[in-house]
Amino acid sequence: MSPSSINYRANIDCFKQCGVTDIISLSAVGSLKDNLSPGTFVIVDQFIDRTIYRKKSFFNDGIVAHVPMAKPVSKELMDYSEIILNQLNFPYSYGGTYLAMEGPQFSTYAESNLYQQWGCDVIGMTNMPEAKLAREAEIRYCSISMVTDYDCWHPKHDSVDLNILIKTLNDNVDKSKLFINKFSELYYQGIDFSNNDTSTILDASIVTHRDSWDKKTEEKLFNILKRYKEKN
Image (cartoon, rainbow, N blue to C red; front, side, top):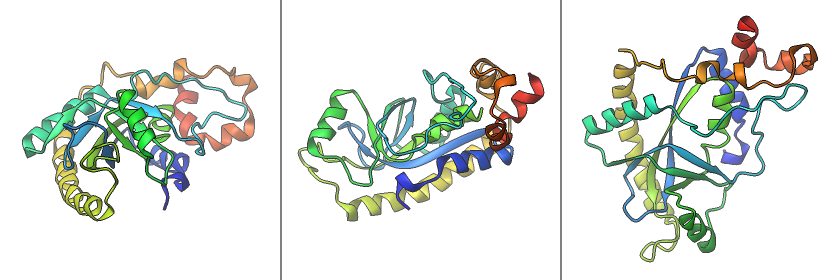
């Protein structure tokens, strides 16, 4: 399925219905930095959203909410991810900006160089609007980008070679399974999220007075609004 065709809202809503509180999103990306070679894991902390065809909010019809996205990922989950990557001795970089492109085509040379000038570190197609929707659903989010190629900016790798990309992707899949297993062990030992307000972010984000909520929208957002309605 093309990244543009994924129903991100349905996925996040399903996670919320299942009681998910934290998301670790692992995805394949292209590198926009010479030091981020294929096989490197990047613990992303910022995003630039260049997608244009995707539904990016739960709050469109009759209920308006403006969630803050200045810090789009959980610092706590980032820190624990770094611990795991160190334990596994995987090459990684802590922090980085993810450029989310629409796709499914890869970048032009001009686009790739533009994103480099913007200071982006990696480029991918799946983290947006996923990260935004997770925030609206009051789910903490962490993005681990697994580099598969150099996009097309690199003078020695001037186009994306799908054969090399798929081989690196397969290698990263095996590593990602090890990462998730290790992370799960540490996660269930307990993480202190006392300084993270994502789980109650809607308390200060919904601007439409409850008496004015559109009833059909309220019904559609049952899972997303459940905690808010119980506490407010």
